[in-house]
Each structure stands twice: as structure tokens, then as C-alpha cells.
Picture 1 (cartoon, rainbow, N blue to C red):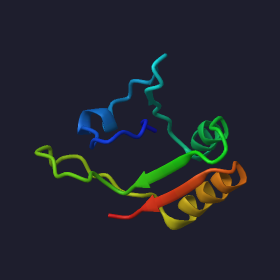
Picture 2: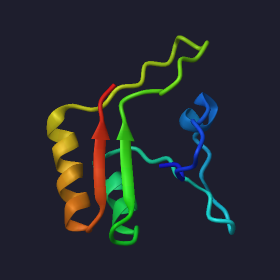
Picture 3: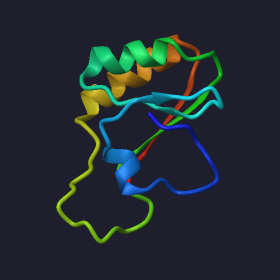
Picture 4: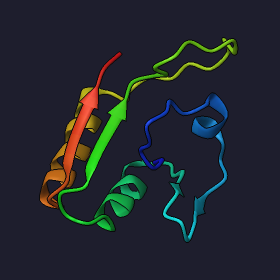
Length: 94
């Protein structure tokens, strides 16, 4: 999860396993697994906007990274949890 800005994120920002929550409000959190994703979503304020992207918006020179969404059952599970948390959650397929 990375704070939304008015710029596309770099591949390095997206795949980095470093976590960061700055005093200025920049959030970069990396977790693995459904329960960990739900735990992070549970900490957000109601009506937060969350977009789950299927891949990079801009093409990158690094071609060995294969980003994709998980199976539909997992997506629906996360969507339902986000709804219960009062989040505005959208999935944007590539």
C-alpha cells in the first residue's frame, strides 16, 4: 500500500520490501497474505479511497517483474472486508 499522489509510482517503490510511515503522511506498507492485507485495511479511516491496480500504469524497462491480481475469490474476499471497514475500494484490472 502506497500513499496516492499525482504521479505514477516507480517500479522500485512498488516492489520494495521496505516499510515506511512518515510524519509527513507518506505510507509505504508491504504485507503478504489475506489476513495481513485485512489487518492493514482495518486500520484505515472510513471513506478512505483504496485502488488495487493490476499492474504498472507506465511500461518499465525491467521485464522480469510479473505483476498481476490474485484469483477472483481472493479479490472478492478483500473487497468484502474493505466494505465492512467503510472503505471506498476499487480494483482496476489492466
